[in-house]
Image (cartoon, rainbow, N blue to C red):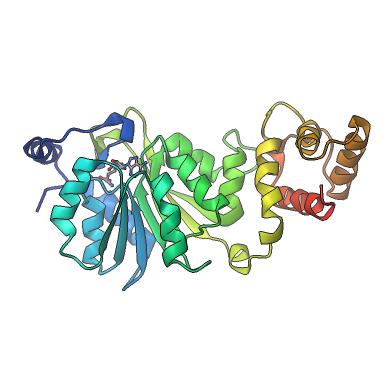
Length: 297
Ligand code: SAH
């Protein structure tokens, strides 16, 4: 079996196969076996659970998942890696490979195989250029995993896990918190990868929140997502000014009327007009969305 812990062995293997590492696909293999093991254990999937693995590369994590008897669905874009993965794993009935850009392929897999709210587990040493877009896409399309364990650039991890008031708090933090409890696991230094990236990475655990299981907020989520984005649109502006732009873009009322509605909405939710989005807790975004939804704005 290929030695996934050795940069030299991986490099020699790639050369034999006539393959190179492509920067544009964020290809950095995780060559630290302890970290790979910890990530798989933290995922906590067992027996015949279904696990989606994003970007299997040459299959270092895939091999661990298959050893555990899990049902593994991998999503890979690189044609060379796809050829290698098929050679290595296609004898295994639990191995499934979805070829192409995961941003385009995942949705058909979700609707065809998974019931709402019984979504599988997700594991991925995510390509840095699509990590945030992919997670946001899953959340907004209501593809909710029981647990996700991902490796991303440290800076992205800090945004995922940030709480109100911190400098990393953004619309993406609110989006993640709307659906998951997000826990940073460990910092992973460049030397744990081949080739070595320029920045630190971080393992992150996402656990589905109980409120998502009830689905109580589902009704006004179509207002919640664009609202959160709008309230962070100009970070230096107050919530009131960003809310004004949001409402104006949805309902073309007279400016004065929209201004009054903003005041009513903020008062009703006990939010000071001079607040900024970076200081609002998740519940404030939910209750604002609920009010706006109920007012049919
Ligand atoms: N899991 C492996 C490789 C991680 S590198 C390991 O830890 O060693 C990131 C992987 O994601 C690469 O295999 C890359 O080809 C793949 N990838 C990049 N962009 C992708 C996309 N849009 N869709 C699917 N896979 C992608």
